[in-house]
Length: 350
Image (cartoon, rainbow, N blue to C red):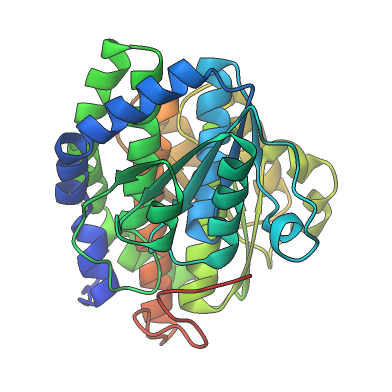
């Protein structure tokens, strides 16, 4: 089954991701090396990530990345403690990383400011090296991409994931992992080929207003980011859960009226993903699966293949079918993905 695809600003920026990621691998390398050297010298006891929106989902990826490879305690910041309650935590031995496409949100900047005031190490990853966030931080990794015009973030999200992955490989001097990242742009190009499949496949899901999006481990972030893209562009209710959390209560919601999107590249949770998929089908739920596992793809109502790569890198690829899914669902539902109602590109929160 085939379907015509429509060009939008969002679709154009989704398709720009391979080139943007190739550029980051080259242009951001010096800044990443400097940041890694500063982090090693500082020897942080904890990592705090300050972000909002899609950047907050990138921060979820960093929790697994820096926890698994560096043995660090990694937490998401609570900006309200800094801006509304004026009760910031102790940050003297913290590495605080501010993540923001625009670098404009005052609450994220406030976390960075307080970190430096207390003597902690502050780093920013942003697409605007002249932004308030970049100015506030002691170190800035600039993504250096062409401006992102779509309200729904795509290339800035994958760019942030790549910058975090690069930083991790430099922090532990791991040339093997660093070299593996060179394959990401081509894997993203391969993922973009699935747009036709998704344009046709989402038509079976156009009548649903509620979705579950499930992922675990490194792809916990992917589940949240896909859910956010669906909410922004199609105005559906999309709840994100880990597989484990789903079993602790939300599974009771699942029936034939609640489709489930399962992000399940091969990795530590592969067996768990297969058992979950079988259980979902027993409950009558229609399923969309993004995976490199043939069995999972065969079992799904709509299977979306992706390139196989080490699990720690898979969120950079798995999100691309999710972006395309959100785009095509919005189009088939008659929404304008370039002009989400009530939203603007730069959001400033306190």
